Image (cartoon, rainbow, N blue to C red; front, side):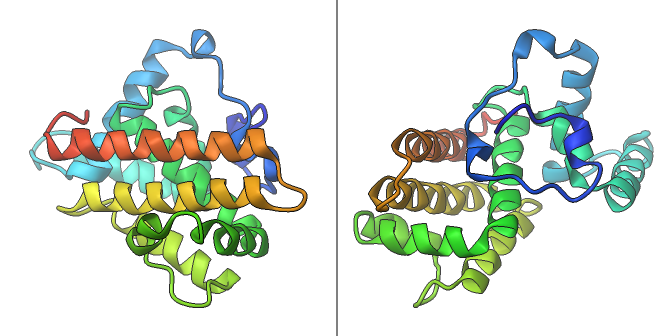
Length: 204
């Protein structure tokens, strides 16, 4: 992820293989934006508990912004959240989905290479045989649609499995980018940890 900002997502972005490479600097993140990101993340995943509150208005504004400007404008609020937070987990899901949608052929190729080395993760990821570009895109979209629901931990586990397989595949490719593959494996590790926290009722 090379220097991603809100502006990068105002129009359709074309992230390359370095999409996972650079983490934003937490010191540059205003606390108000961070708080807003956490609140939005919780509303999107947990739902609105008090219809009388202003939460519905916020959700409506968020969804309108996503329709008009793209989800990336909202996801930017999550980009500096810690990996063991709900907002941090959503950021990783968003980045994973963005990359797959822009490079489906590469995602499918690296998944195919990696699955021989990660059979358990392959089962969790649930990609059909053979894992072509459209199958990989469909998997990621299915995972992201699972954000709202009672099984968010399963969503995180599946995304982690996918990221792990692709990371291993990237390192195994002839033109393999081992550091970038390692970062994908780190992303998988963070998503698995988030899934554990979700099952423990400790992901906020």
